[in-house]
Image (tube, rainbow, N blue to C red; front, side, top):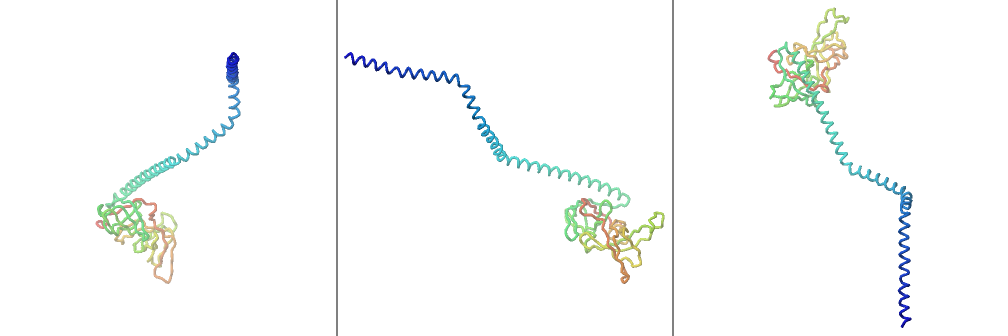
Length: 287
């Protein structure tokens, strides 16, 4: 009986030994880790920092790349908005320049017509077709009628009104193939000296040949014409006021077998650079 009791006591004592040893080892490890935790962490970060930096840099690049993709739509929209704003500013500048140009043209025309008694309506050019027909933005509502002369502020003849609508009209240019205008040729003195007597004027006809071009015809074969001679509307022309600028001679074409000579001319009208024209509304009444 005593043997059984002693065995039980020894067994309990033996059971405490592993617990005590385990506890001691655990405490020792905790103590050791507390001592070496900073060097261990430092070594770990020292070894892993290049890897972390690589992954971080890659992550930043990926973030920027993905951000550029996701923000691409916003950037494109912003660029489109900037482009639209730029176009609006350009349109405003063009509009202001057009207004300024129109005001200057109006002032020039008003000054030149003060002593002639001619009345006019300023109109904007809105189109040109292949038949040398020009459209303007004024019509019957503005007092425009068929047959009225059309010129610019420098008194360069463009043509006459041939079709009228309520708010716009069409002009048959002097270059139109159906256009025939009586002109006179203003020649310089033979020597070029302004004190020399002026050479008598020569009459002729400007005929349109299409494509914004024309030629001079029906010049007497005996008349001496030269390149540079200026063509203006004649007093015998009933459709237009006299002395409107038409063009100048470039090259004469003379054939002694024909009663008349011709000449290539350069028209003064320039549709591409013209924004405003003037329709003379009372010429027939003053003619």
